[in-house]
Length: 107
Length: 116
Image 1 (cartoon, rainbow over the protein chains, first blue to last red):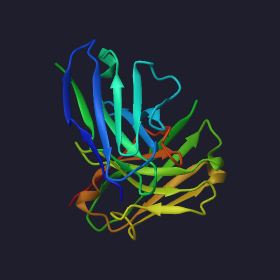
Image 2: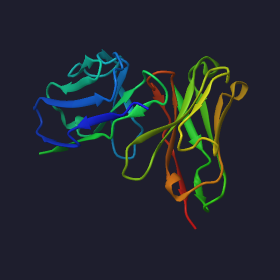
Image 3: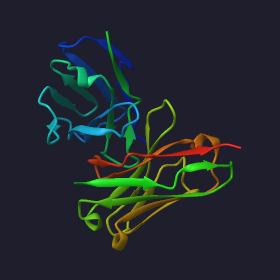
Image 4: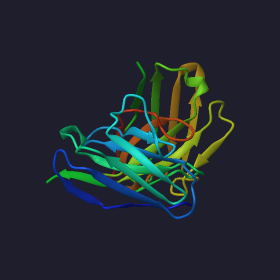
C-alpha cells in the first residue's frame, strides 16, 4: 500500500497568512493526488484533484502543486473560513490512502 | 442538488452486525463508482471499500476484508455496506462517497458505535 505523510500535523496561522501544507507519498503517484478540507462534524470537501486542478466552486486562493512523491497545498491568504483540517489522498492505486491530516488553527 | 444520505448506524455489541445504506439523488447513480470511507473519533479518514457502477469491480481495505460487504442497487439509487463481526475499533463515522479516483460527493455520515 502507498503511505501518505503530511506535514505539519498542526499549523497555527493568522488571517491573511500564506499557508503551505506538504504531502509525501511512499512511492511515485504521478499527479494522482487530491486535497480535501474538513470542518468539525462535517464531511470532507474536495478542493484540488490531479495535484493542481481546482474543483469547481473552490476559491482561487487554494492551489496545489507537485508530482511524483512530493506535493503541496497552498492557501495564498488565509481566511476565517479556512480554519479546518486538510487531508491529501492518493488515487494512483487501490487501496486509496489518505494522509493523517493537517489542522490549521488560529494563531 | 446532489444528496447522499447515509442511514443504519447505531450502537452494536462486539461481534454483531449492522447494515448501512446510502441513498443518492441528484446525479445518475448507475453511472458512478461509489465508496465507503470511515473516520474514527478524533482520527483521520480511512477508505474501506469501492464498487464500480455495475458492481463488477469491488475492492476492500485489509482492515475489513472478509467482514464487510459492499453492494448497490442501481434501481433504488442506493449503496450498502453489510458489516459483520464488528469490533470496538470499527467505531467510527461512516461516509459514502462517489468517484473512482477522488471523491467529489460525500454524505453527512452515520455513526457506528461498537460497545458492550
